[in-house]
Length: 385
Ligand SMILES: NC(=O)c1ccc[n+]([C@@H]2O[C@H](COP(=O)([O-])OP(=O)(O)OC[C@H]3O[C@@H](n4cnc5c(N)ncnc54)[C@H](O)[C@@H]3O)[C@@H](O)[C@H]2O)c1
Image (cartoon, rainbow, N blue to C red; front, top):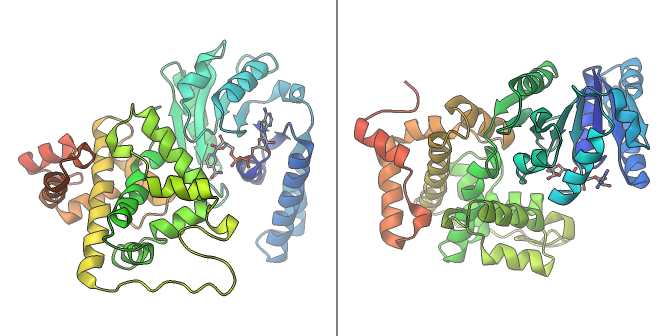
């Protein structure tokens, strides 16, 4: 197929690599010529490195690179079959790009957005043919992260979603279907991984190193929440949290933390600025965690029960199916297990009791137990047989 990509940044470059590997002809466009040049250089470097390591042959590297055309005008998209937009996360800019695209492409070209936090419906609403708009949400780095969320809007034609699913599966990635609600699956359900960790820190129950240690050792997560936030960037993570909070009509469950906001304001963005929750500058000493097992278990379970609560609520509201929710968290953020499977293993009654204990202690809506979990506890059922 002929695939168009708008935006040659981190995501657009990754999507181009993936599509070119599957032998699609890729048209990659960016409004900024320097960004397009950087993308070309980085793709060439990646492919050469893969050839050096023997992962692909030299001829394959040349062929794959040859599949990508770096274009300077959007009009070149005229005969593309699918176009994926991966530009700046701004609704007005995206809407205007989609409007322009509609005047260029053929009537049956699918227009997809890679937005992480905007409403796909709001982007579609600006289009003449909203039925061809769909969210195709890749994860970073695109080539390695197998998960892709497919987000139809109320207006999206079924054939469009089906074609998107097929395109992603054919490239060897894992499509899951998500409702067009804030954060889709992963960015919604993962919120407590950060927010509950921050709450534990803010209350002085444990420091960042101890919370990270609890999540990696007791929980088996690849990275602790603070290491991960420093990796993502505290500005980026704070913005996603704030966007999701607003988009949920200020539901207290998604309330951002002052600690993270202040870090973002101070420019302590994490690895990229050398300082975040941790200091990455040369000679900095890594703080030692508290290794009290009871404390570590308390931290891990508190965060896990909040994650399970979020996953159960997403299932109750039909954001995605049980299997897609568990797949999404395993392959979108590398969780060691699917959260609904984990809920069964912890025991549904124990999940409900732990959440009720937190609610009783704090009397905050943030800790309300999902009605689905409570119902399952009454009915003595589990997510899996
Ligand atoms: N980075 C991530 O981890 C990630 C993950 C999933 C989804 N996303 C989403 O993907 C999109 C792109 O993110 P990114 O991290 O690749 O950003 P980026 O800043 O690395 O790249 C964006 C590119 O878009 C170009 N651009 C901006 N406005 C344009 C326009 N009007 N026309 C053409 N090109 C334009 C910029 O020059 C830039 O090269 C955003 O919507 C983001 O929310 C990002």
